[in-house]
Amino acid sequence: KYSVKGGYNASNKHSLPSAIAVVKARKKAKLTQEELANLTGLRRVTITRIENGQNTSIESLERIAKSLNMRLNITISDQ
Image (cartoon, rainbow, N blue to C red; front, side):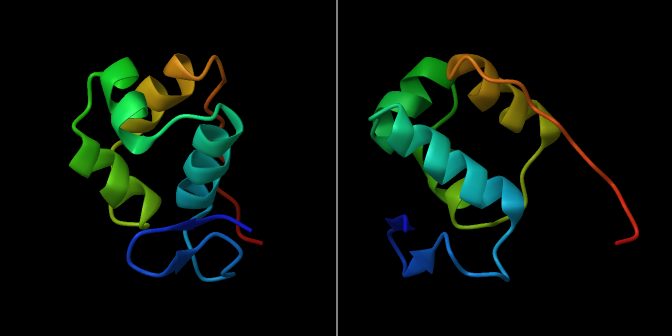
C-alpha cells in the first residue's frame, strides 16, 4: 500500500493507473518526489500532481519512465 500527501491511496480502485504506477516505481527506486523531479527535469509539484491522479501529459510520463529505467506502455481498450 502506497500513500502520498493529500490522502491519496494507491490501492484505491478509482485512482488513475498511471498515478499508482508512478508512486510504486518511485518508492521501489527509493526516491523522494524531489529526487525524481531532479532526475526527470520536472518540478516537484508536477510529480505530486501526477501521483495525486491529476491530468498529465504522455511526455511527462515518458520522462519519468526513462528516468527510472522503465518503459511506458499505454493501453486503450473497451474492457
